[in-house]
Image 1 (cartoon, rainbow, N blue to C red):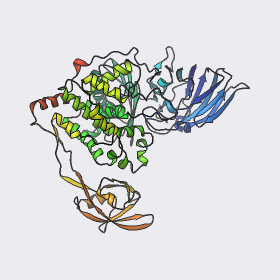
Image 2: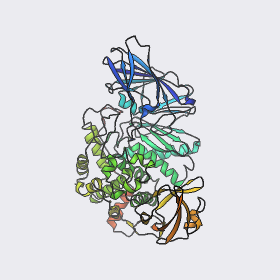
Image 3: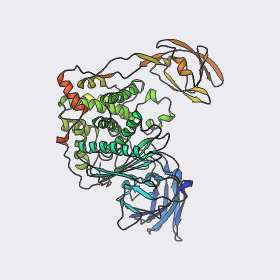
Image 4: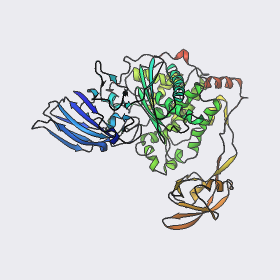
Length: 594
C-alpha cells in the first residue's frame, strides 16, 4: 500500500491547511484514522476535533465515505485507488499541536495526517503544491530525489515522528560529531544571541555524542520557538521542537534553563527514541500506551540534561548543586512521595501527571517522574561512580542498553533487563538497593549518595512558609494551592477561598508579601476569608522552609573522595566511547516484536 499527501497552505492567517490523501488500498474497504495522541506526550489529545470537511474526491457511483467513530472514517472504493481531502485547523501554540499562522506554519504530523489502519508500514510521500507565502521548509524527513517540494517516509511511524516547519527564517548550521545540525530560531532574537546559542549548543551536543560513543544521525533539526509565555519541548528521532519565553532568555539562570531544555530534547534522540521501555513501541496511536518506566525515559534524561551542562562548563559546581536542590525541595515540599511510587507516576501519567494543571491537589497525592526520576538517576550514578572509583558511569549503562536492545535485539527493555544492563555495564547488582525507590512510595536518601563525592547538607536559616499559594483575580487574592504536608492542613481553608485579611489587616496582591514579612515560623495568625458569599475567620500556624540551598561542597573530605568528586565534575569516558554503528543510519523502521 502506498500513500501520498498533497498539502496546500490554505489561508494560513485563518489557521487552515488543506490536505489531499491518495491511497492505494489493500482491500475493498479502508479504515482511515487520525491519531489520538503523540509519542512523548502521554495524554489523549483527540486530534480529530480539528479535522473538517472530510470528503471523497471524484468517487465512482458505488464508492462511499462514512465516519464510523470519532477518529475513524471508512472508505469503500472496491479496492481501487482513491483520494480524500480535508481541512486541518491549527491554532494551538504548543510543541504537540498544529500552529498555522501568516508568520510561520508548524505542522505536527499526528495532528495532521490520517493513516490506513492496515497500512502503518506503508511508504509515504508528502508534497507541497507550493511553499508560498513562505520561503523555506524544514523537516527531518528525507527529500525525494529530483522533486522540488516532496519528502519521503519509510512508514507512518517515521512520518508521525517528523514535524514540518514552513518559515522565512534561514537556519543556522553547524557540524559536530559527523552530524550536521540545523537550528531555526523563531522570534525577535538578535544575531549575537543566535550565535551564542549555536556556540553553546555545539558544545553540548558534541559532548553528548562523544560520551555516548557517536550518533547514527547524519542530520538533526532544532526548532526553537521564542514566543512569550511558552515553555516546552518534544523529542523526535532526528529533530526536536522547543519553546521558550524570550523575555530575559539570555540572562543568567534563564539562559542556562534554555540550554538545559535543548540538552534534554537532544539526549532523547538516544533515550526514548532508541533506548526505550518495551511498552513504547510498536505504538497504538488510538489509545494510551501504558508503561511503568517513564522514570527511565524522562527521569534519566532529566538528570543528564543538567549534568551535561556541568561537564561542558555552562553550570559551575554550585549552580549545579542549586539545580539538584530545586528538585530535592520539590519532592520534600509535597505529600506526593508518600502517596505514589515512581512506577505509578509513570503508569498513570495519562490521567494524573498530564492533568496536574487542572488538579490543585496533585502536589499532595502525586509526583513527577521527571523530578524523582532525575534524583534516582543521580543516586544511581553516584553509587556506580563510587563503587568503580570513577571508572564506570550511568552513561556506560545507557550505552549498554543502546547496544544490547536497540541495536542487538531491535526492541525495548523491561525493568529487570534495565538492572541486568546496570550489572553488565558496571559489575554491580543494584536492583535490590534501588527497586524500592521505584516500586514503592519511598523517599530516596539522596544526601547519602551525594556524600560519596563529598557533597554535604546542612540546615539553613528557616524562613516563613504559609502552606498555601494564591493567585490574583480581579484585584483579589484567591487560594489556588494548599500543601497538606504543612500545618495548614489543620485549618479549614479551601482552594477557591478569597483571602481578605490577616490579623485585621487587609491583604491585596500588591502588599501581602510585605505584610507576611513581620511573621516568623511557628507564629499563629487569624485569617479572614470569603467562601461562596460568606465570610469566615480562620486560625492558622505558619510553618518554615529553608532560606537557601543547603547542599555544599566539603573541601576537607578525604583525598579519595576529593579525587572522585573531581572526576564526577569533569566526566571523561573517552577511552570507552566506541559504540557499534547502527546497520542503517536514520532508520525508524517499525519494530515488529517486543
